[in-house]
Length: 417
Image 1 (cartoon, rainbow, N blue to C red):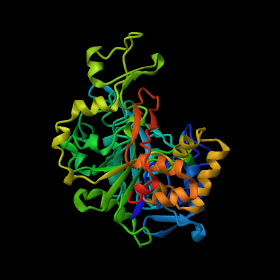
Image 2 (tube, rainbow, N blue to C red; image 1 turned 30 degrees about the vertical axis):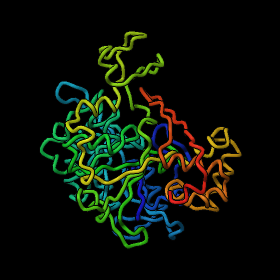
Image 3 (cartoon, one colour; image 1 turned 60 degrees about the vertical axis):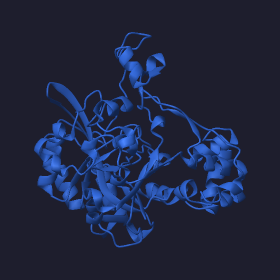
């Protein structure tokens, strides 16, 4: 199995950690258990120079740190922000763009510069091109390029967002819609929410971290039924994404969507949030100040959904599991902050003694975790696996809150989890 994260950022992206360099990213991926990661930000000239200096192509479209000094592999993927007018509205759509080679990525960048795009301003550049035109340019540069709508439901910058999006893929991409093979579900929705839209039945659902720091890498990820040690190529990866029913996209690892910062509707300035049916009652207006509420992901999904939850055909879709980052679980168990020395030290020891973060969260025997980290942490992880949690949903830019609800489970009873 191959674990991939195709949406991250570099130190050249606005509001991102300066520690986001390729060697640091590779090292963090080894601890997380990520096999394949996006290079990010290949449109930025300085970052592209960093890619050229720090990596080498080891297989077609697959890169490693020079000297193969890490088992982490990289794929050329960047995020681009399109802001433009269409249908009498300002549209803000973020897209992930995949490139099969450095040469193709550079040619794509050159075309964007020729079209007046300022690629030096930000690792995630803002362009005045429509999402459809961006896709057209990519396909003209190389038919092997791929574009995927990023965090498809977030209100402000996505294909289905309440503030600036569309009601269908066709409305956004027109005649180029057949070239859209996937969407990224984003932190505030999970696959089950997307399964309620029949228009997405033939669309692959991908999950990625959108990490702005090393710590956030892999908070969501996509698993492929590809041997991570095999000689896979760029075409193998994009081919797996494009062929929805090929079973090569085996599973996704998810944030609990309620923890996402745009799950329900609300107004952060007034500390007010509400479910979609309550938004309807108040006419979309904050009852505290009279300003418009930010309509969240759950509301948009319900507005566009045409399939009842109980009628979803699960065989059409890859399964998923939801996780809470290990450092948060350790902090909850110890009763302190995620940045405390005790939490950091325990996290480091668990990675050293048990295995990668994904292995610990998803597959490591509970007895093994208990023997190394103690029954309290083991029980917390077991409770997460059973979804024994209490959720306070996020809204209007405010992350949701998760509390582990322990069931006084004996560690020996969790041996099969």
